[in-house]
Amino acid sequence: QVQLVESGGGLVQPGGSLRLSCAARGTISSIEYMAWYRQAPGKERELVARITRGGSTNYADSVKGRFTISRDNAGNTVYLQMNSLKLEDTAVYYCNVRLYNALGPLYWGQGTQVTVSS
Image (cartoon, rainbow, N blue to C red; front, top):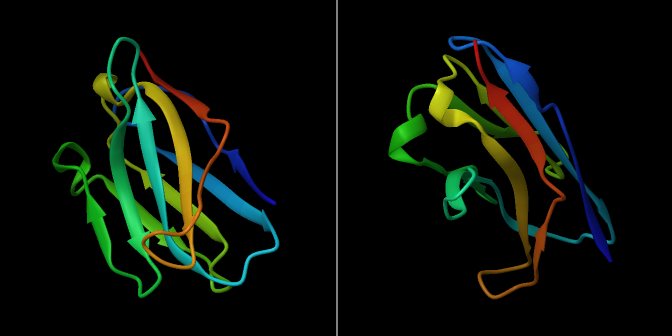
């Protein structure tokens, strides 16, 4: 069983920064990729950023140049550094992890609220 523990959400003013963390705990032999999604009220869940086993990253166009995804050396914790936050970044952010390979089991975190407001 794998559990994803998220932290770091909160309230921030426009232009501010937040750092989200997600730790994967349990019996984990390999991780194919780790990612962050978000879902704003009334909208579908969307991919924000993903980092693969090999360290390749991809980002949603709306966050390029402002957000950075990274992993710790052990590879079981993923971070999302969010800078220059905008009102439209307000959403619940979810951590997402796929194990082993492209068809491996997929796990989701419980979500953490990020609110950008003046």
